[in-house]
Length: 233
Image (cartoon, rainbow, N blue to C red; front, side):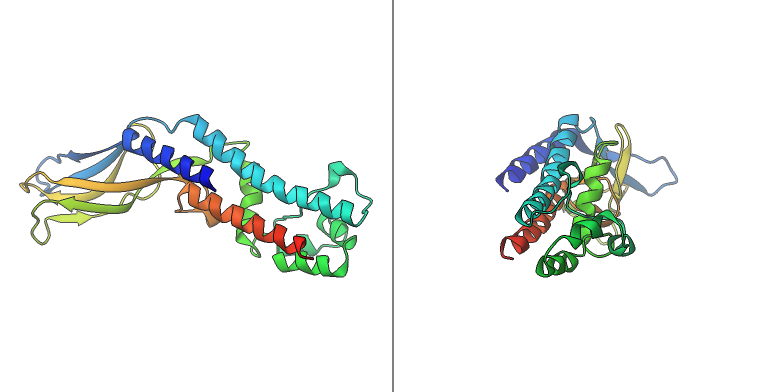
């Protein structure tokens, strides 16, 4: 997973360059000013393409596993119809005549049980469902967004109780927009604010509020676990 470390490093470099923290003066009668984070440039598209390619590669590894099982057991399924079944619900997974059941019916009992153990559907195996879902939506919209919600924030300077109120920026922003990190009382000497943000996958559920590289690691671990199950069968 060394490639993810390199991706994370490049994302961190972009965040250092592309996000600034500033003091925003509020007019009277406000008693405090705002500390805001601003994204100065759009996240480069090549990051979107790279993360999408990783997701597709992980998903494809499971389809390769499905093809191995087809050939291992001489199943009469056209290559164009072979895929590792990940579906939207348990009901769809178990539905008689579904593509998932047609595939499972040709497997020996042990391997059917292994597939059922994986629960490859929404609400059963969140990581596998997220992998399948993200591999679809990545083709139609941007997956990544800068999350200006601090992973860590520290203040250097002298503060009395009540001088600073952290708020934490929730969600994502567009170019020129601002995310409020905290409020600081007027008259407090200038402070050095140090914080870390992350680039996350813009999707609710499994991937929400996680750095993109952390999500990729979890997806590859889920796929690897599934593949190893059938390696040992």
